Image (cartoon, rainbow over all chains, first blue to last red; front, side, top):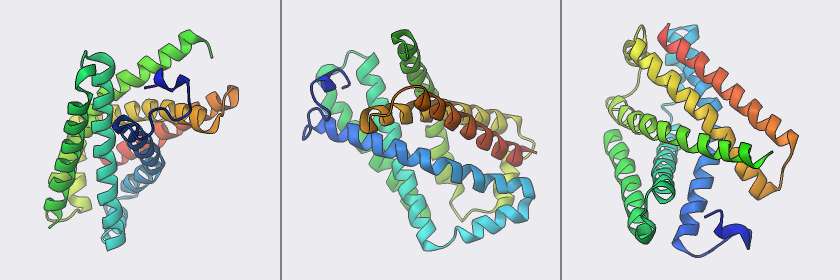
Length: 120
Length: 112
């Protein structure tokens, strides 16, 4: 994808591969921004079980639950998009990009639904 | 940065991605199972405290993420913002060190 981008800044805009590329970028940056907060929250355990429980209690509110749901979707998106990239770069599957894309989208949906069902 | 170094970063990004693929898959399964019936500190710490296996897993997970995320951010900064040069390399390295430090601190808190 990078080689194809030599001619323009945003190659193949409108192509399914462009949206896969964009989703991978956005989810990757978002997850990186989230990581410090995640580590800080888990680091509450250093101050003891009560401190960690205090954070978990705060995280019970619906807005945080919604954010957690979004994060799981982002993680699944980046995972499946990354597997697609690794497959495209290291496996001779160039004729099957659409199949790989479909599998990535399907796996993302499956993980998101599994998380959602476990919340109900 | 030399072409050789760029190639090294590209390969490092792919190797860390392969490690993360396994870690993230395990993490997603753990999340789905752990949230059933709600989360509590006792439940989380009951799983992690004194467990060398979980500590090794999360320490590896943190290391792979601390390598992978800054290389990805560096690429995005170069291609989207046009940011290049030593300041970008230093910023990316700082992000990696900070993520590793914060992540390992959290792992220590969950293990000890």
